[in-house]
Image 1 (cartoon, rainbow, N blue to C red):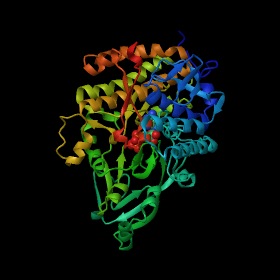
Image 2 (image 1 turned 90 degrees about the vertical axis):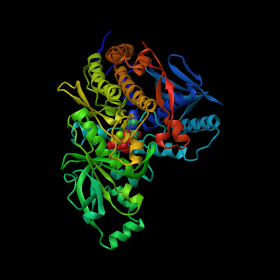
Image 3 (image 1 turned 120 degrees about the vertical axis):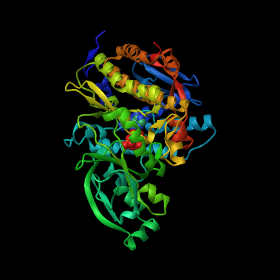
Image 4 (image 1 turned 45 degrees about the horizontal axis):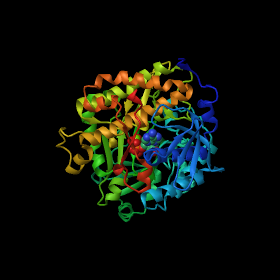
Length: 512
Ligand SMILES: Nc1ncnc2c1ncn2[C@@H]1O[C@H](COP(=O)(O)OP(=O)(O)OP(=O)(O)O)[C@@H](O)[C@H]1O
Ligand SMILES: [Mg+2]
């Protein structure tokens, strides 16, 4: 089997996906990906006839083109989309998905179509803005490259407000902007750890979008008018990363994770007080285990005003910097992306990748009771000079949990609860993020180059993961147990909190 491949693989490959990667298609594909995974697939209402996939809805049958055969947990869909004899646009697909959900769940969601439309609008804006190759180093360029975003979310790019409000802060449009600075008497600031590289003593950096959202809060106005807080104007220029609310500060080489009272995919992006408190403690516990494989979050700072919205809304976490040549995994796996090296030995690349990402995640879980959240956006891949993966760097301590048994005495009870998962919840998160969200998507991107390679990739992965087969959970996976996949569509439809999102079971490609 030819496993060394380039971008041109006849009619089925990445080149073709590139050329059809429009906002319309990306929106429709994401919706159908979710519907098939969470609703129609489990109900046995999906039919693969080789060239096209048919999804039987209550009132009609929707079809999509199959870009290539898939041996992963999900089909590789592309337009055109049809129902009966009619071609469907993205909006009609969204309406059919909404109607199907209303019927199957017995509930309605009047926000849903608006959120899908907002996501589509954002994708269209990014497509028009083109790729601004601003000479950003690979890491930041990859952070700003996700024009279509999460492939299993119904509204991956939706943002509250009009484009005029969010475009200045959008990583996908190549944004850079200046932070707002607030001066305060040091006793009016709260926090722990050494924050000095990010801001001087008595200074709180504020995301300018959040500043606009919060500046009319009565207690903030009062503190400003009494001189307890001072508006120091604009600070240094920063570059937003893929999460929108976390920015890179070139002057100090660090990241700053802000709260942003805006719904981005599943959550309003707020640093809860207990997450602020937990980040430095988790950093202290996990740094000895992961070293430079973890972007630590050793400090935070916020205002100590008697208003929880301000305490959390103005809370900012300092995150360590990352190697400039690293690339975010989501950019490597993006079917519309350009970060996967052009000429690689696919099998050698995959072997190196699985070892770099999966081995540390599983070692931490099984040997130390640490639940990383290694989804595509939370992992950076450090390559060698030829582009081959050397190691992974994990980030985002908000999603990082510990199994019972860790000493967390220094944390308040609420924070201890927030960072502690029981074994089942921890394993579901690891298995979903690692296998379904991450490795399956990377395998699919490699298979866009060489459609026949997917079974070999999974066989190789199973061999590499064999060392963990002494652990029951891993043994079950290697024996073919279905894998958990987060139900983003159902969570959005029922307007649940992200942490309440359930899982559906999907085919396990490691089964052999
Ligand atoms: N495959 C993916 N899985 C999860 N998130 C993805 C994926 N692809 C793109 N994303 C986007 O990445 C973001 C992930 O959000 P997440 O909650 O992990 O980050 P955060 O906590 O806000 O910030 P940070 O990662 O900087 O700590 C969301 O905007 C989501 O849409
Ligand atoms: Mg993240």
